[in-house]
Length: 89
Image (cartoon, rainbow, N blue to C red; front, side, top):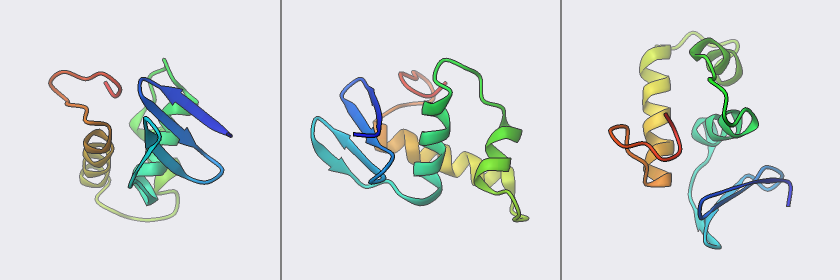
């Protein structure tokens, strides 16, 4: 597997799959890219600007809303909460 393990989760970057205890969890597109960006720099603070340049490099979007929505989708997939974060702070 080319990927990452954390808690009960596995992320395979080559097949672009997220699994929890072997069961696939649907996460694709920007949310999957966000998760990979955070995993690649685990333990570090990843700036909003770094995320913007990776996820929306040549697109004019409402970045703040787009990023917040994307983070919320990743948190939902991981059953993580902003008030009591386990994986995304």
